[in-house]
Length: 279
Image (cartoon, rainbow, N blue to C red; front, side, top):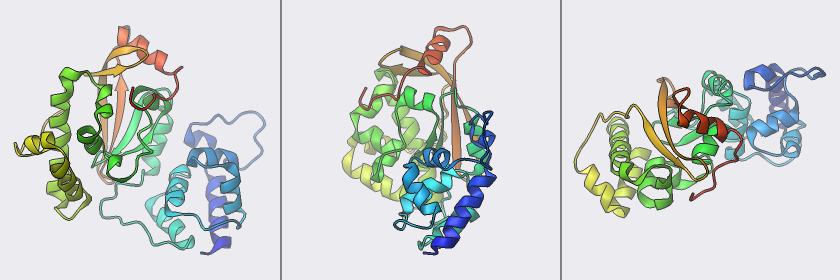
């Protein structure tokens, strides 16, 4: 671990990142070049003291999870992320799937959607980044570990994950999620994380096994998605998708028809906190 170079690298990247780049107001009394340490710490989801000690070349060696959070918070490119890992004394993350790192360009788009439910998802259905309205709509989906990081695994193993959709729509969603996993499995092969997901679900879910055996591919999203929220009730939302082919990621943005009841409910979500798990 090269503490001095790591600290200097973090400082230069923090100073190069402007408030407008991450959706923060500049304010009238900003004297710091770029972002403040506490602002970066908040973007990374860690304490200001922990981040500050790293940038001051002191404290423990950051874990790979912490480095990944710093890379996202500072909007690093893949090359910059790999450089960060090397300086911290870790091997660089595998780039084969290129699904775990959100590109700076995609992050800038998300930063400008702060008042809209939006989330970045990997090809396997792992939520990598969410706006606050997205967390209010479907809950914080970025904190899961193991195979539960992937929506398709939670769908077939955790009944609470289905509460976001009306029960009559569950069969269609199950087929859609399975078709998406099959596309990833075909592209990546049985020895990939997609193969691990398929093996685990075949062993644990009869429902998944039955849908998987149908070999459905190319299923498309419906024009209007119905979603349930414990506080505002049923919403009918349009889901626009922006595909980042280089990163194999999708940005999902939820909108409602202006003037509709769902539009008013969606505005109300902005004043609510993160949706509680299992509701």
